[in-house]
Image (cartoon, rainbow, N blue to C red; front, top):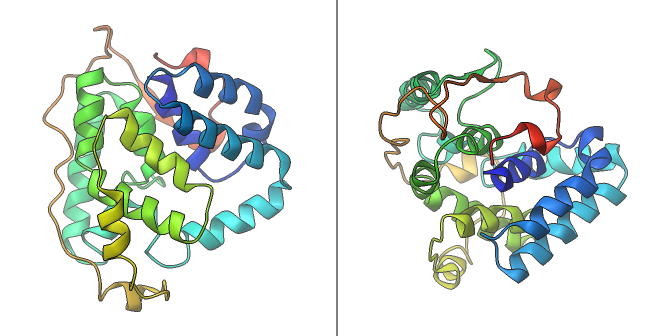
Length: 233
């Protein structure tokens, strides 16, 4: 599903290729049947923002938003396991899922990085895509609400992920629940508000692509090309 590949690129660390191929990504968003009109509009606005801003400024903003503290972290297991030993086993289990699907990643890549997980899902059949998103929906929705709370345009990318799986999230209740959440995003502060939950990423899957053809994808995300014609639809 190409739109998941687009969302993966949007949520990944900003690079020059994202700006160079911005028009192509915008076209994929506007052509996506899984997104509502307002969802498309917000994503296009985000893409234009990423196109027009200075790249170094975007990278600095990205670091500040996603990599300082745990509230907005795109490392999924930080939201359920924190720094506990359980996170290590969860990583092993998720790596095993990728391997069964024939999806390869670099040793230095963390398997629970949301953009990587979305890229993996983009190669799977629709039924597995929906299941895979459902299993992380509680994390994605919380991050989306927090991003919206700080007026970040990235919130639209998180809500788009949920919309693709046709999930009915009660955002108003979540906003009320998080209204008094500490603004401090350090690990020590956020440890006080995380609840540990078990996340099992999808059922065992066969090592084949949606059309039944064996595939191998993955590698260094920094060296991957952006053109979407290379991605399974």
